[in-house]
Length: 279
Image 1 (cartoon, rainbow, N blue to C red):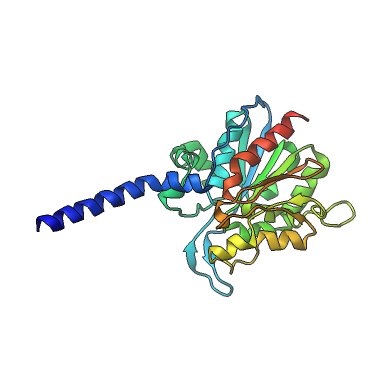
Image 2: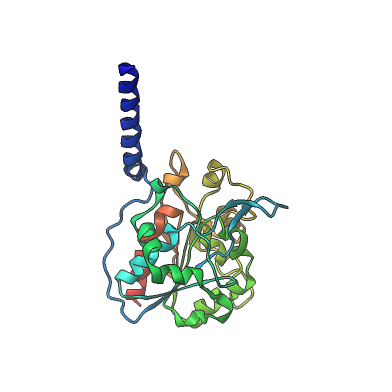
């Protein structure tokens, strides 16, 4: 009996140690890497973050499935990076109202995720987001599209979002960015000749490899596939599992900044701010 108690105690202690160490181990493997970016003084500048309204990870023809939405770190990390540089941040969505948050286990939450969930002002913004139809995108210095599986169901299907991106591109100096599935929001933007605005540009987004590795290949759009179809020069890094890969790409014109996946939030935000400061 004493031996069994000792064995059980050792197992419990081991499980606790592993549980406490898991976030650190995943970080060392490449998940949510630390990024020491410069703190800019961008007081008076405005950022608009757009995210999904879709909250069900449903397969084609189905209306039910696991809960999904915005992958919070892809919103929370840039949100607080912008705020640290004194930028006024607003949050919108395709239809307005609630932006669902994808449920994630504790060991992949970022410090910004935890802070965001306790921030009453921030949470109010995503529960009562502004519909894009009443937002003038040209009034913002930064347009940023957050990802998450939910974005695969609405951002790339919104012609209005495409029109708004085009308006911001032509009628303002806004730096336009996105991470992971968020980049799907660019595929309907057109240039003045009616051609796809992003054709020929260097961009990144979540890879098909990562989508298939995670076993979620039934969503209606995949960023790498859709960007390539739109004529983008697609760039990406890889790892033993692409969830641990990371890349941020600035197009040659320095108007679009895109991040490969959830690991690119900080670098994408800081490269956007660097471009804004240099305008």
